[in-house]
Length: 334
Image 1 (cartoon, one colour):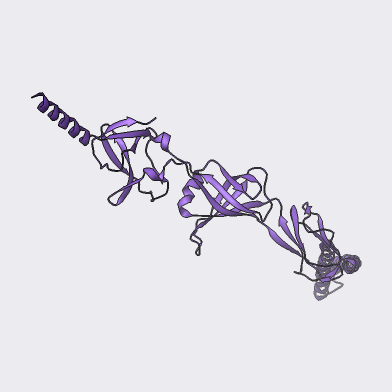
Image 2 (cartoon, rainbow, N blue to C red):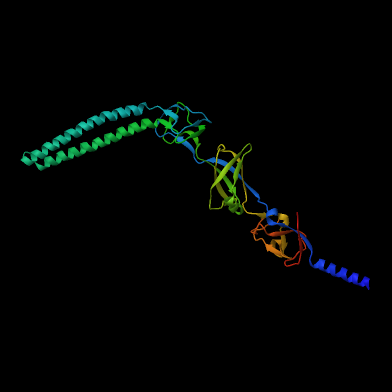
């Protein structure tokens, strides 16, 4: 009789154990990972300019060298300005003559108006004096413009840097005749530098939320801030361009490397993600029952973004045979 009772008790315990499998759990906060993403990137200058001549003149000097850093307004090239100096002198002399002609025309007009009132000259003669005065005034304005143009051309013979610049290439040569539009020096804007990276669309949200972004070259690391993400896909590579600015020190234009950022959203490690039916998800302990929580953004073999509370109890041991709603005997894993 005692033997029969013992057998019945053993069967009952075995049955209870089979109905409530032993599992181990951990808090989501303890198993969560924050994946690091990366994208190939290049440091670029917003202005890669070929500074050209604006006038026709012989190149006298190009006083800069490749690799040199110059300030805004520094002389990049000097052209022979003698022809334009002579043109300015001629225009200045013509201007004096035009001023005298205008003054004389105004005096004649004033006398004509007085004489026509006294009846000594005809109205037609007055009209002629008025026309002469207007012509003299127009000639004066034209001569002033010629002098201003000549002086401006003299200034154009000094080709200056439009911004703080890195000399990339000397194109013109001393002794050559520069013509309008002919490039003399190629420069990079040393003050407006950004990092350009190609980012997969799935990673854009994590990039926008990331609190720390770095650019790593072969020899150094730099802090970045996200400037903008181009709201269009690259047709060939199906990714998006992201632009970053350096927070402190910056790398040289042309430097290649990687942009690294860490997702701000908690993810589940790939080994905790299971498939049940057509869905990927994770089992959590809901009291004495196992609950399957689908993860819509999960992909097999990759950390899965999860919106679980960090205090959620994730089943880590004994999860493979579970089904949604199974009774469990959870034990927290240390």
